[in-house]
Length: 316
Length: 296
Picture (cartoon, rainbow over the protein chains, first blue to last red):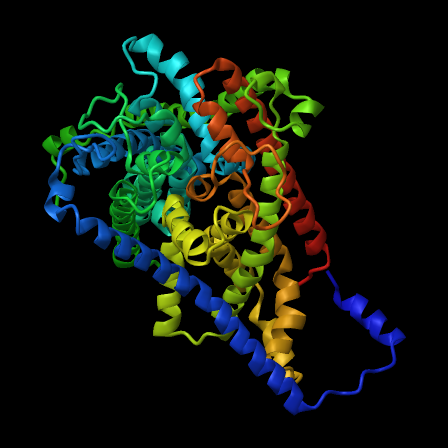
């Protein structure tokens, strides 16, 4: 990078450049503005691309399979006869894994958030924060490996011997670990934004540390905490590699976490890896499932934005 | 209002008990944090123990094989390198340009807030959905087939929102006095951005983009839809060749029933984590070096 001092030295050595005309500089300025605007269009195009591809392919799918069969059907066997296209088993598998992940990540993440914001000193924070960043940066395929080769054989099976090799519990646990930093960091930020005067007021009334944290700071930061929970669920719903490896490929309507299930993302991965012809109805199912997944995560993301915008307490 | 004896009987501050609960909560805090750290340590430790014995120079320079003990990650390593290059060439300029437009050019208003919301939502779209976009647009419509270019572009599009958001944050951190001084001396908007704002924001932009690149390197889900996943025992010679990447190779090996392949999957994970660690170290060094020249 060129610092101010460097430029001065460089310009002293070189003969002074003839000044460019203002008109030329303005033309450059306008050209660059147009180019930047063009670059900005890329993200808009991406959105249109995603929406159009999903709508077009889902529409083709729905010409063969009635919408009500897809949404309310309780059997998902598009790859075998008799073919059934009920998405509910995939949705239930997804929600089961995401639910287990949320059950782990929400309380644990919130407690870590409270700890970092209210209790931990600078030294502790400087140890814990990088660890959370590393945890957040571990590729998801690694979590899948961990679930299959460590969590199931070493943690779950000793406790519940009949557990399937592929099961929702192990997938849910590692996905929970994966989204834990997200909950901890966002809820910590929300609590750190609560003004000091609120805490001091509570102390002045005789509250203990815990009462200040749980009865003053957490309620004041509730919108941010809720947003972190919803974002974590959304991330868990959309997670692919870990569940494709560890959750199994058995689309069944069950709430038993120790059985093999299949999530929406897991199904998309399974079909993509197989040799299903691309123009067949069997292959089109992945776009219909993708559309369902897209709508679910979009709804969750928008919900978290609305909560932050509408329920945030603004303190002066 | 006078305080009666009955009122006094109601006044039970129970300070000792409340303090005890408080201490209990502190213990809970430490336990929760320790559990999170422990999980990460176990994950890394378990991978190291299982994968380290199979790490060798041969592992890094061999192609995958039907036999676990002869397999290596060469094709995947080179594929990951090329995908990273495509992301750098495509996503970085596009993302930084978008961030500059949003922060330095766009007037506050409906257009800007719609674009901003759109980018935020794109960052929340599951990565496998980007694979579907890549399959429909790059693989099929543009006729790139299941090529390195199609995969690289898909990952570039996937991390674009992250590059934009991180670069925006870096630009926002530049004090507006710098811009005002430049305008006051008669600079045009682009001259101000190019000579003053961008150099000042560069440390932050570098850190943010390298973080986005490490996300790109670890991402596998969209590539499941793009890559042919077949046995890739060659190096891509052009952008239109088929390819594989490290996370996909790991996925293939983990999905095999044999224990031996799980072990080399662990070795490949060590390679991947080492790569990510090196990149993040580079990011930190670059940031610190760039920061040294900045004073305000």
